[in-house]
Image (tube, rainbow, N blue to C red; front, side, top):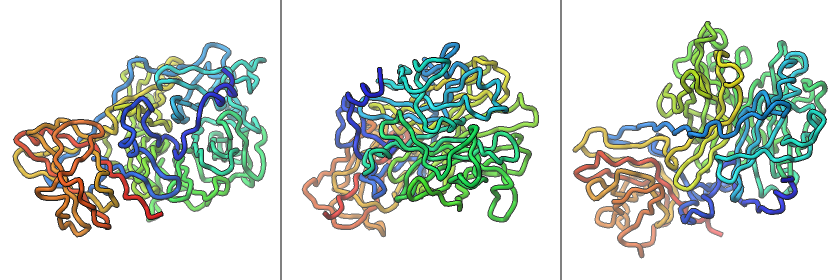
Length: 536
């Protein structure tokens, strides 16, 4: 299928950022699906309050947080490297992105061929190129023949066209903004590329590219790369930038996350860091500030030679949920002995778009595979998160840090599935004792709440009340007028007894009490608050 055929039979979804999209048309939840929609550069239409978010839910009594690892799909890897002679016969690397548009899942990833990898140190990353795949269900993927780039004497492949072709590297990340007034810039990509004047091979930077369709990409920098590397004067990011990971827009600014090393980054007191998370920002995606944010570092980190300590690898791929960011990163467990190195995936969260934290310190969310499995010993986080019906899909990559598995453990994209937004849950810690939470202050419409919970019944209820910012109950929505949820579901609407009551024109807090003789069985994963419409 050609790229023109694909474009002609689809419609772009308005108002979406990266993977912040509504549920599919086949899902009969049109109104509650707004919980996943974020306004471009403005205020969220809906707020998602995850159980693991102690900023949005700062006040808790007798509640414990439990993280829930996702399931690895039985068909993994769902996207495999190609056969001999294809652009990805050595590696189909998910340092990339998945974006859902309408009924189609679109993936951009790095294709590496075997011939190129043999001469990697001599010719930089020239064989590491942007490739494309697509799927109707996120599980079964095809690599369409785009006919755009010659490889091995043929254009019969899935490589996207990058202008100039010297833009090559080990990582790309894509952002889709269908409402951009310039159609040629509705797809945005940051692509890793080698830094020409680097002190040693492997040091990289990132460059911006634009596309109207996701297939034809054009570089936007003052100068062009030569010999598959870019010189310092033409770099939009400072030479200290090393490896990228996540790309998103927050309060009108674009952010690019990634890892940095000493001596380019340090703790506020000047002491050295190992691999830590930094982010750079831009107002127009072309010109990037050289002032960075130290966004995250491992708790309890102590300086150690690179690769030998507890580091954060390529943090963080990011899921933009309007008012909050969910991120994944590699929990690098280093060692002086290469064969002993391991890397599961850890979970991060941010409420300000700049600073990230772990909900549970040093707690892996996704374990690496056992020896002999496709994803043995090490995992990679690409930027791919989507809601599919009652489930959340997450795509990830593999990397055997110990380099012991041979070619079979190199390349491919795996799929993780979990309950919709089921990263973690709150439940009563001590049965029989009062258990409750009170949220931060949010603007809310009276009928605009939904809960994601299970274990709910008449004996394990959620009593929901609205409070003013000083925590005084609002009579129309508290006490005998409180809402009571007695059924499980991923998007269960909150119904008020007095549905005719008008919500006072003010911001509110939400209080949720866990009640009933079996209240300890209730698990709350998330609360969704539909924002009060702004005055026109």
